[in-house]
Amino acid sequence: MKIAVCVSHVPDTTSKIIVGQDGKNIDPNGLTFIINPYDEFAVEEALRLKEKFTGEVVVLSVGKDFVKESIKKAYAMGVDKGIWIKTEAELDSHSTAKLLVEQLNIIKPDIILFGKQSIDYDSGQVGILVAEMLNIPSVSVVTKLEINDNKVSCEREIEGGKETVETKLPVVITAQKGLNEPRYPNLKGIMAAKSKPIQEVASTSVENKIEILKMKKPESKSKGRILGSDASAVKELINVLHNELKLV
Image (tube, rainbow, N blue to C red; front, top):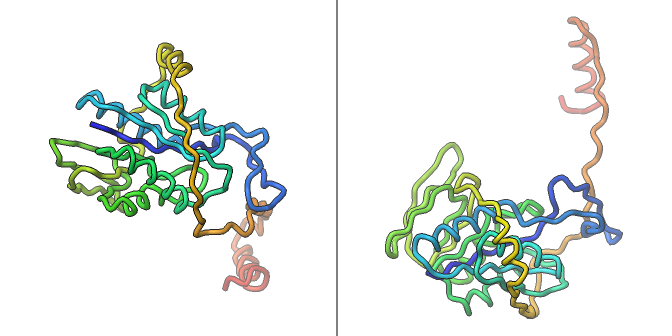
């Protein structure tokens, strides 16, 4: 079985985000970047599929030089091959998907795994766009995956519960927390990752469908105030809601 996993390199959630001077992107200086946490579930599931069916796991990532760190993390977990699609451009979901599809058409995997979303933009679109461009089925937010012969059975989260769906290979799967427990790279894997080459692929020209016009941090919350501690506070509360906040 040939398995592809697409990963993104994202700022650590503990990092302090600063908007760059252009007002359209974050300032990467001083930020700690990590492999997207949801993508770790995708990598782990790919490795488990390889252990069950044998085959090859290929990880792909699009972006600038630093995305190689996420490929190396996947190598340390046990991935066989890494492909870095090089670009200095700021891409939207559509352009990212298009660049991935160009390489996936060459690889021709049986199954393609993504995290359900990246924790920086949270759009959850890339995996679904890739499936659409490849004209293959997709199942999102998957918490359980079973493959028998060519038949794929997935349990996925929906609002208020879960549902089970079936499809066939090839398929795109986006992984949700709970699908598995990602393994920690051991010393052998970490050392092996240092010697594994990363295939570099120049990106083709793509056109974004979305333009970021402005980026800003949320406004600080105003301090609360106590209006009173007895029934008299009700009248004051109504006055604030009506005259100050214009909510009633």
